[in-house]
Amino acid sequence: MATIYVVPVFNVGGYLVRNEAGDLVYAEGRVEKFEEMDIDHVNFGDLVKLYESLGFVLHQRMHWLDKNAVDFEAGLYELDGDN
Image (cartoon, rainbow, N blue to C red):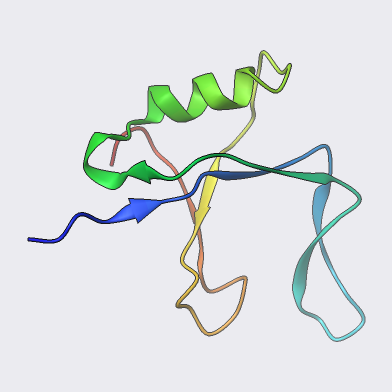
């Protein structure tokens, strides 16, 4: 089986809002991109450590985005631990 890699990308300091067309978009934040990681070896704790490396100590929610979804909102899923 081929190894699948993911690239952690954090949108920090902004918020999700609907634009004039009614689409959900990320606004007024910054994007931090990390090196690719083997998906079989990434866990929630790893992602929290990456987030903390940006200078943050607490997070409210963490989401992942399925880039194959029809749009941003349909592809956005809340992370719930390692599941």
